[in-house]
Amino acid sequence: MAQLSPLLKQATPVVVDHGEGVYLYDVDGKRHLDFTAGIGVTSTGHCHPHVVRAAQEQIGKLVHGQYTTVMHQPLLELTKRLGDVLPSGLDSLFFANSGSEAVEAALRLARQATKRPNVVVFQGGFHGRTVAAASMTTSGTRFSAGIGPLMSGVHVAPFPYAYHYGWDEQTATKFALRELDYLFQTVSAPNETAAMFVEPVLGEGGYVPANTEFMAGLRERADRHGILLVVDEIQTGFGRTGKFWGHDHFDVSPDIVLIAKGLASGFPLSGIAASQELMAKAFPGSQGGTYGGNAVSCAAAIATLEVIQQENLVENAAERGQQLLDGARLIADKTPAIGEVRGLGLLVGSEFTTADGEPDPATAAAAQQTAAKNGLLLLTCGPYMNVVRMVPPLVVTAEQVDDALRIWGEVVAAVTGS
Image (tube, rainbow, N blue to C red; front, top):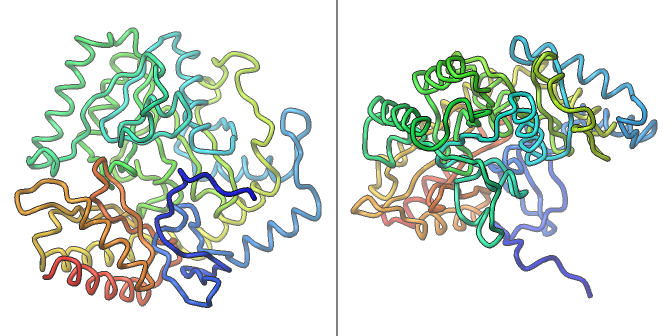
């Protein structure tokens, strides 16, 4: 009898029968508030009728049309629709299946276009599990341990994670930019550096937002040295942060944007966007793949974009995100076990620490597991796995946020004794 790999550790004991909106229903009929959204994937909620209808209609027409063999209408239409929301100047798209594939496609493009070997990533960033993407990931050693030697040419600079350093944000930002300059002087010369890859909000790294000064500093150095700025919007894009793109909060223009997760409401689809001029510098035959731009996924993505617009989900993410952040901070104020609550839009993390300020993954895990038993599904993240993250679908209502905060407050009080 075949079984799933024992390495697939389940965050909750829930076996799902079906989902609807912000809720998952298990095989016993119990309803769960899903504040994981499939790790930020089900942006329009579970089984949104408009997305389901689009996918069903497409399945009856064409399931797979390999896109370097034939073109199909959903792919062409999605490309056109994304042109309306992509950052200015990014008018060329390549589609793949997963976030890791998008990262590797951007890496390949950056190296080929600049003819430079090195890339800079930032401490705490997550970019994927495939070998190159894992080599660029520093949110935890679990993603790269045991598969070395890793890809060469990757160099790591600090991210302005103020709470970790015990500094204010301005001090952390100045330190991060100063160390980036030092890296260019000591490790990877600018004329050897193809690109910098950065998340607007560290995802697996603990839901730590960047800031305007830091992102502006990256843009200035990229322009000065001819380095490409690659913004990883895989988790932060499509309204998740309360603006359409996470980098919109920081008034910065990327050279390449990475997309996935919330793009197709659960159907596998990812991609990279760049200018036509930049994309043309890649080598012929360097982009492709069997399943990229799948017809059903593209149809679901078109419907997802329509729902985001028609239901004002970007605005809802901003409003409900502020409600969630404020509520989580009020709960944290009642216990010293939560050192900081931070986030942007519907990305909210509560970092658990001990009395002496050290990471406390045990209490974070206890809170996450207790919440699951009480009908609220959450996940942990951060290098020490001591951050409990809330990432509900963008369709979440004020009442559902209040319900989640009620459960979370009871859970925190129970596990911390506060």
